Image 1 (cartoon, helix red, strand yellow):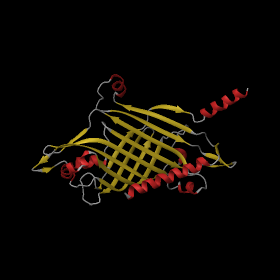
Image 2 (image 1 turned 135 degrees about the vertical axis):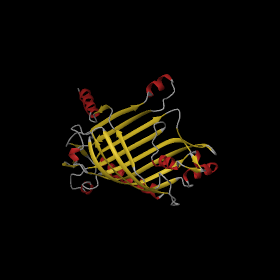
Image 3 (image 1 turned 90 degrees about the vertical axis):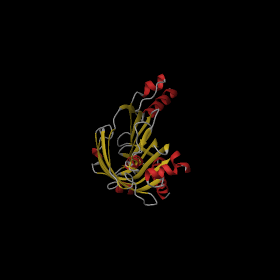
Length: 315
């Protein structure tokens, strides 16, 4: 509960900073605002939707949204570096399939031998079948004398990530049970590369070397959390807890369209019981392709069209 409250407060703080700047009379002069949208897809999703065929085991669609606000703005007729948020990026992937991943219990001499598989699934629930992945970065502007600009020299920005998926846990002695798992983190990060080096001339993210500190959470939901399924959940995990929270460190880099990351979560349930593959200190290694088919958007196009229409109406 404390973690969720802190998360809400941090999100409200970011929104308040952005809203304050939006309400100030300002004009972008130091570099035009840039917006980029890339699409990435996996599996034969389009034909499945169009022809009614069964969706394959791995079918998904992803979108990468980037917005660069500019280098400087005119505040009360004075050109100054942007205060606070300089750019925002979000990566979202949704995978869909007609079936979900199934994890089965293996027994040897009456003992579960693959308990770690279940703990690892809760730790990192992303699936190629039915899952959601959202990763968002907010970058502060390190140039200027505004208090947030000064902080940005050391605290480069904020990161928010959500991963969720559906699955089935199978116990040959008790039966099958459906569940959903959600993992999220929210925290700060430091970018080691200079601000002028991490983007292309079109202000699109390209290079990055970062280190982050986050609040992490893992939650188990769905049928498995009902009272009728307490036995199967407790026998598989070794605990009746359904939520786990703690601190999560991460380090990674981006080289053009490839992003690699190392995560180190320190998670516990309130009962402090250790669960193999989930609690104590765990290591996660991921590598993702973050490029695709680009859709170029010009934020000033609407304004230009409106100006043109006004001129024509005056004539």
